[in-house]
Length: 138
Picture 1 (tube, rainbow, N blue to C red):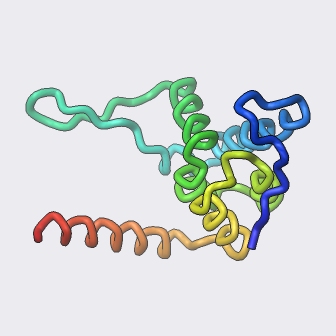
Picture 2: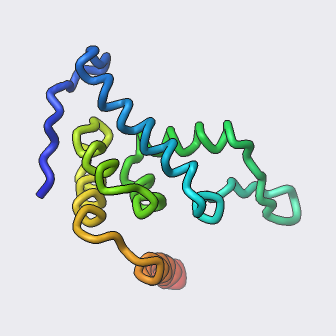
């Protein structure tokens, strides 16, 4: 199991923790520069009164959204974009405060072991949707 080596737990991070934020920033930049990023990024959908319409975000808005997920919901960031990162990026994220949750550690362990194929990710998404739909039908 992955253990975090983070000794910074205060709300205001001391200078010694700035490298951890840098790891998240580097990971976000690498993900956004990846050729598959555009096909994986989910633009928000809004209801306009009759239909659900996808609202395209600018590159700056996409950066803000992905950065927010990476720093506050690391597990979501890793599930969506973890396969786009190199092993050294994943190892750098291990020490980040955002990676201290059980969900984030789960994804880091899994991605460092062996990246999930697109088929496995699709199968997992379909399975989750089916479980949700089944709950809704009951």
